[in-house]
Length: 332
Image 1 (spheres, rainbow, N blue to C red):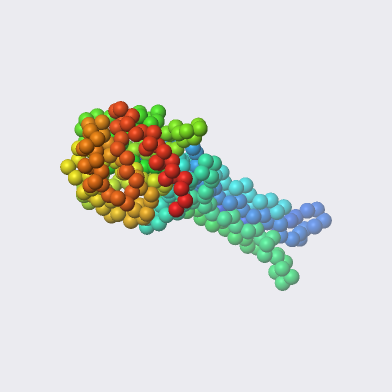
Image 2 (cartoon, one colour):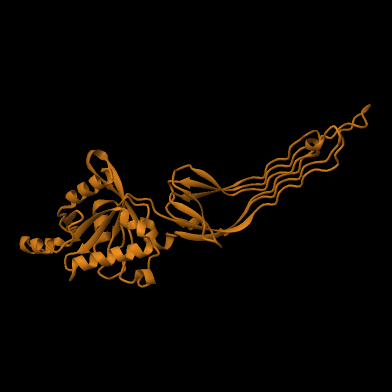
């Protein structure tokens, strides 16, 4: 996905339709000048509805569509005729979209399945006609209910990419290079920090025609939680990942310390991220001989599976895939 087309945050104004008013009509016919009440109900106002679409990867189509206004319901009529419902507005969004109240930040709903439809802003209920209010002691009610007003609110839509494994590492750790090697994704790759400015997704082919989805997240630096570098803006994209693959270059001066920095930034952003399964890949290991690799191995954390890889020479790439697949399918 092109960086200038990847939009994962939009703020929109949603106005649902007003409900139609109920009718206070009385039946009149030749020979029956004093017929009873026959006022129909008003129609419901239009909803604002979100629909999941697996064909979308960005909220770009909503960036310039700031106001969504649904149609009102029609008034009820004579002869118990109910007014027509206002037309709903159905907005397609990518899977992983979360809707929040713009004022309170309260989560309203999230879309996770293709074709899933959820009402974001409900339309106003139609008013009841006077036929509902007749009784033995009130045989000619002259009143009916007005329709309920629609809702006018600002909503924030934010996208959290759905992926099986998320890549976590400092800038230039080799995340984009790995994604380009194991999938058909073509993220930007260059020899400078913050090459990746937006998340990238890739489908990784595995044995027996199976596959899993990998997400490359822009690099994290120490102090990201305080806004340094690209901050933690994109970390929400790994909140739904089943497994986190930490990637650290073999030329790092202190791999264990770098790993702790990454853990610390994740914890500050969302402590629940530390509960996810973790793997560690030491990248660019084509620069190492066996002796150096053994020395580095002794300094690594012992509480998670580790593998030395090289995207340039394909060293242990299949082994890494096997480790990821095992982590995705083993029971907690």
